[in-house]
Image 1: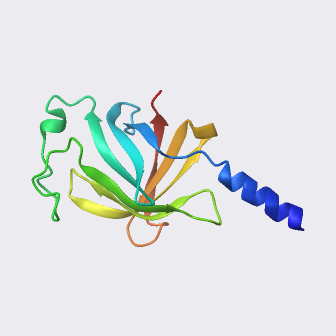
Image 2: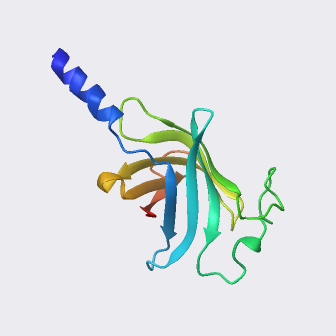
Length: 140
């Protein structure tokens, strides 16, 4: 029985980290943006690094935001905050994610899949069942 707990603990420490640069793709498969995810003060945060496929790119401002981000340039804007690793699963939970187009902020959780090559990011309203998942691709 103790061996099982040790194996679970070892497996969880070997879990790939979400820290890095990720490419967001839309429903058609077209790239939309690059997000840089980092760890700050023990929590996972993410900021828009680069806009892909939009002529106005990151010069745009968050005109729909209702908090401290209102009017801020999208380049470098923190859109993910407050995530922490769940000790009982392979997920990062308890965070928030901002949709800068609408200014809406949603609950957020994520997990690294496919050996660290992909990141499943779920934004939801209230409970996780009421949301949608995007798969982001790690940049090399």
